[in-house]
Image 1 (cartoon, rainbow over the protein chains, first blue to last red):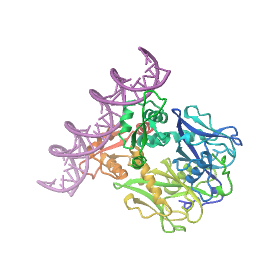
Image 2: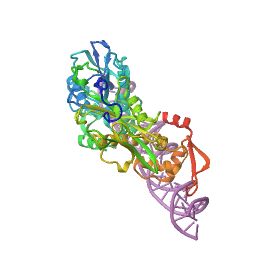
Image 3: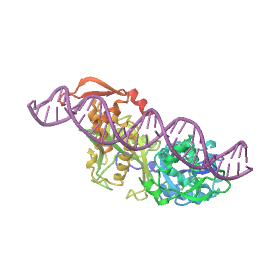
Image 4: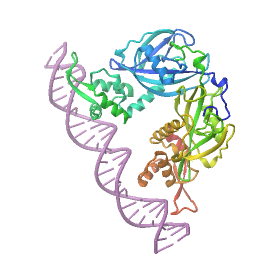
Length: 228
Length: 228
DNA sequence: GCAAAAGTGTTACTCATACACCCATGC
DNA sequence: GCATGGGTGTATGAGTAACACTTTTGC
């Protein structure tokens, strides 16, 4: 309640910087990946971490997250969900930093992230081969992934990660990558074909065996489903 | 990621105060209630708001929330869950305040909250009769309630709100109060009696018609269930 | 004795799961 | 022609939802 109880706001209580960190998930080559950046400044120089940045003066944290994503991977209008806020006094070794973690879903093939500023590298890492992360970002990433799993189980969130035309097998690989478990093909197909936002196209993809049918999204129907 | 991207930490980005606000739910007289405090200072003097306070120098937000609850209602070891963080630049009319909302569950009969400091009153309000709240606390309370509903649907969280001995009808009223819908008595009893943390006592309560059986909790079994 | 609340089983439906064979294509 | 992946249906079990009558007690 903003200092109404005994702990009135003081210069001390304002000493924390607030940042937004993003666990950005993408799907390519049949594998779920996360976008990481490598720091070239202390603390944690040389370490991989989640991309993030400090909240600006007239910005809310979600805007901070969007700005960081725009600057880093050049993507607008991404799907962004708040996960949690982390405030341990010693989570940043130099100064007090409170961070709010978001997760985001993007199509990697649409964007080529480039390292700028304090970063020596940017890369997609398969979620199964993430290096140890700096700060407490290993925990943030894990929490973000768990939240994504939880939300995917009752909403078809993940179709934003697929290319414009995709096969049901690709969709299934995506679900399996996120959930971390194998799914039965027939049960999966039945379940997602029960949605009305999948449109079968007549086109088939060259170079793929068995000529799988390509689907595309009915965006309006998907949005309707997501709002339920 | 703590200022690694372009938005390096500056004095501006540190200008926000961080607070923890709590939606404290209790259950008495068969009704779900929330603990509100009334401010006697501007801004929002005379308005009811959620209890909260500013994060201290060596404190994480959860500790802030616990401290506020201890000072206000004298309760330790309460069940506390983080809901979300709110950072709109204008959510506080005087200065920049970012807040993280928690919800808490307590037994009202064990604690008599007293108004101190900037507060002219403290009271339990039935959730169905909450006055318009100051700041954006109406939204916070709503979000906290929604999160509580969501979590109650897959974990038996709410038994902390019941007295030591309680009837199944009371438990059902509690669930109905939280979920905001009527439940079938037989289905409800079957469902919660399937848990093994409910212990039937031989005692019956005086003054209640029909001589309902009183139950108590097997705390260890409940904790086990909550960890699942 | 009557009003009020407690207590008790069964059925139908929906949803998740498990499981195996044939077909089309690329090589 | 064979290896690879695409495509399809059914049966079972679990969980959820709907539904009405009898018993006990306080007054």
